[in-house]
Image: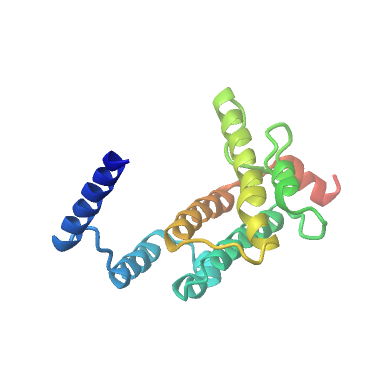
Length: 179
């Protein structure tokens, strides 16, 4: 038992020495301004900034993330011309980005690598709806740190850009025209 007390005493002394030297102190206000600066640098999509900037900067991190992924869901739905359907979330993403019959093509979907990219992004988009958007939409107590929210907002920024660059598949255009 005395060995454990000795180890605890040494650990406490090390912590005390670290604090006395000024290491280990986190200046919350400085960190906050760094995070805000990083947000301003990384969140480049104007629609995403309009939906999330005030929420994020006011400390409503989970709500900012939820709004970002709702925006992504709505953007995909609109671009795929499915806004008049009940399709949303993971099923929407699986339908729209399906490598076998996509409504939105991230590439030409010709080579194996292109089909793999289309399939991988379909899974990423669907997973974001299930693993990121849904918990924040359905759990009123969900919390995110500023750091975590910034990571997720940056990822949403990337997915929004990929959606905006996606081409509407010829089959989707034909369906819309009733051909």
